[in-house]
Image (cartoon, rainbow, N blue to C red):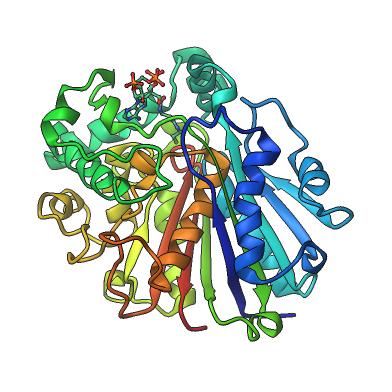
Amino acid sequence: MSENVAVIGVGHSKFGMRKDVSIPELAWEAIKPALKSANVEQKDIDFFVVGNAGMWSSEAAIPALMAEYADLAPKGSMRVEAACATGNAAIRVAYTAIQSGEADVVLVLGIEKMQESPNPNVIELIGRFGSYFWEFENFGLTFPGYYALHATAYMAKYGATEEDFAKIAVKNHYYGAKNPLAQFQKEIDVETALKSPYVAWPFKLFDCSPITDGSACIILASEEVAKEVDDKIWLISQGVGTGTANLSRREEFTSLASARYAAEIAYRKAGIDVDAPYKHLDGANVHDCFTAAEVIAYEDLRFAKPGEGVQLIRDEQTYIGGRIPVNIDGGLKAKGHPIGATGVSQAVEAYKQLLSKAEPGRQADIKNGRWLAHNVGGTGHYTYITIYGLDKK
Ligand code: COA
């Protein structure tokens, strides 16, 4: 058993349209550097977990494919799915396996090759992550529409505007431009975002995360193994929440109940003040699948009070130097959102930021040694929140 679990190595592919590689090649792009940075070999891995939603891609048996291609056989494996929170859910399986004493070293791969199907099919398949019978089949809701319902509720209640949401896109593209692994490495201005075509009002093209191919990998290890490794971060705590499938069963649209619940658990376990957590954190990655979702996340994570999240972006408080830097790797908006890889990519970013290995212009000041990752599946159908740290607890 090991109460304390560390991330001892990371790897990350280039995100984007990856027609140049097969699924195993894309996985290896992240696995190879992860093994190297952890200074372990395949024989040292006790178990591996693959986060992959996968309905849009050719291969379904990714763990077996990886066992063969990455030489991980005959070690045990598991494929995990929790909609867009798949990556962080995969991390949870590895974390609890090490805590329980089942394994000492676990490899977590998040991978998605969404561009193997045409976009309309992918958008339709993502739509099934909500309530299929009531919302997808009867009303034809897809994810831009789902999140637009939350955005319009927020606008009506708190007076946020399309321009406010555009500012989230501007920030995330600003940092994405500094991340060589991001899908979009181009800065934009508010006008560009506002002029882009509507997808589902109030969302335009630049309010949406794209459809992405990509992979990310981390190696988790028990304290016994981790003590031999210099470059590591610790997994301090996790909180997990689940929401209703059917949106009409929810009382609140300007907040995700699963995220508020998961945040509270993660903060309490980490000994972080639930009322002002930003004072204990150096930065965060939040699930900005749509721009308004980032604003709602500020409030669910208590970076701001209800209704005041929008002021954080108006005042540029989530840039480096502000109250708390958020998505300074480009976020889902600019870095891309390969569904199964996103939560693992957030862990890679926590590792890079806490160890001050991020690229110039996007390195946060590390004072508290704590970083938060917020990974949402569906519209709050699942939320996984993980807090990483430079020291144990
Ligand atoms: N932001 C900025 N530019 C984007 C973009 C995005 N999100 N998505 C695509 N583009 C660009 C492409 O690079 C391309 O540019 P080019 O013509 O210069 O090459 C152009 O827009 C058209 O790309 P295409 O892939 O044909 O877009 P599309 O219209 O088929 O799809 C969306 C665009 C926004 C509808 C689609 O990406 C989408 O549904 N995103 C949301 C995905 C989602 O729901 N994820 C789960 C969230 S929980």
